[in-house]
Image (cartoon, rainbow, N blue to C red; front, side, top):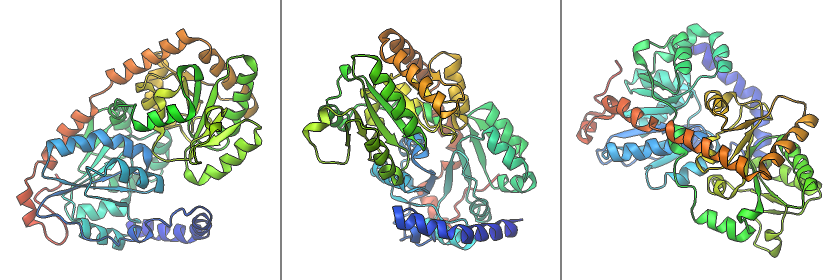
Length: 453
């Protein structure tokens, strides 16, 4: 079955190669770190210390890993930490936020066995922590062959993903057998992964690390820079559209125009597209709107303080702006991509609006909806969604009491659901509690004295 998987992976790579080349030429996508993706890494200087490899797909997983990596550094100071990502935006963010914690930040290898072997030989991890649901069959199989424990951390498995995996359940059972432990976010996630064949005694429910990641300080030097440069005071009534996708920018811009026409109070809009390769596309949309606008990346000008729309064409700064917003519209939830993290704005005490498509954060959104701590829009055609969003924004924007109530409820939920980091670290104790001198027994395969149960 692994041979069939590898064959399909190779055929898929060849079929998509023209698309990769186009994206690489237009946006520089996939070019960055290509050699690393093929397993070419410089040797990690270990000095006899053990290594834990933490894999994060992109920005969301990297942010969620922050409290966990801080906890590992405090609880297991002998360990060196290596962090991998798949996306370029994740790589840029990881290099920034883990610059003081990680000994190495690199791109995750393509899932061919010969590539995986090269990387494992170079990194020589004593353990691998995989964030959320990154189940790469050849990578997991090679780790098992080399007796390197792999833990699924902050694991989640949506109903949609579960249905797809269930079609290949026999293969998934073999893949999951390579995991030492699955530390899942919720009981529903745990039940789904068990239904796919994961052994019950290897499953734990530890909660969602993103609740802990959302409680970090939200005011810093970037916050001050934005406040001063764009004159973002409480009277600005800033609407922050975070992590947007196509066609959400069109919906949001049209809704904003309706909001502007309804009151003498002039709110402002900041749009932060999810993917950097769309910055130029979104810039064209903002230009076409006829609104006064500026770019975050442009030199400072007098127009910055009067702009109606601010295009955040930067990476890794979004969390610093939440505290300046009067409300946040979280993207990916009107574009059917499954939504993005609502916890950071919630922890900052900012009311949140989401669309109907939030399956990536289903349990979190359901918790917030049940508590009346979020505004969720119904599924509607784009034309009707424009009106519905404008109504929701107007209701919150011009009702300070309602905003305060939502913000208070949301922040309370974040605080009440914290603690996943400590529970996860306790679950990792038996795996990571190896002393630095144990690495002296590590062979060329990177295996230490920790084996898979």
